[in-house]
Image: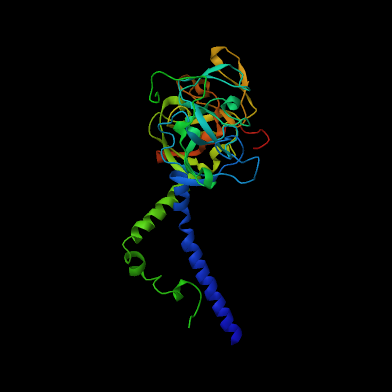
Length: 186
Length: 179
């Protein structure tokens, strides 16, 4: 009798457990959709945006936590914005860089790039990291704006630097001749 | 005393009135969940989309074509040379359908064969070279260069409309020992 009671209780427990599991699992698709299309909080890896992000990368293993805004990420791009995009070399890697030039601009390139100057083609942007250790457009060329999935709007984690990302206050990169006409000209 | 497992032992779960109509937001929430689930299925599983334009002419008509797209093959996963893919056009917001001519490391002709130019390049890492079947009327990699695999949305499995002309898309490049 006692064993039957234990089994019954256990069965009931598993039944309730499965019930709650399924009930909470139904919230996964809305959550994934929110993270894909509205906003997401993510860690930044690597020193490519030093000193703006991961400013302590050579002192600690702690990574910056950032808010990535996904809605309308590809619209009204501007020079200086921090964007997240799928790496053109590896579609499964996400990369953070700063938009340096927009379509129609003329850019004086940096070291590994084979040409001195480049005109950014239609629908493309030129992205560069702030730091020295960066693999950016100077390495793989201008990227299609369709690769961009989000913008970094806030820093969340190191409390010292937490707050809104004021990308418009970042100094302009020298060597960018802005396009005179177009949607994005300032 | 409970008689068995399952939600039957829980009050107010299986009662239709309380679970569906009891709460003012419940219908809305359930609808949102189903929509999100359906969207995820169309994003990561299979989807159906219309295709138009003359660039794939012998394979697809200019108008009225609907195709079945396997989103499992997004980002070029499991795609081989000769497959048809749906991709985000790198220079605007549209989606296009083209045939894969080269994958990373392959050597491809940069221009059409009839132009007489025999310039070849190696497709860079993480990119693919795509062309339309109707070369003179297609805007493809010959125009905007190699396309990042991250822009590949999926592989075309079949043309499904008009229903009378349903046919699976088979890769014309088959190994000779596989028949």
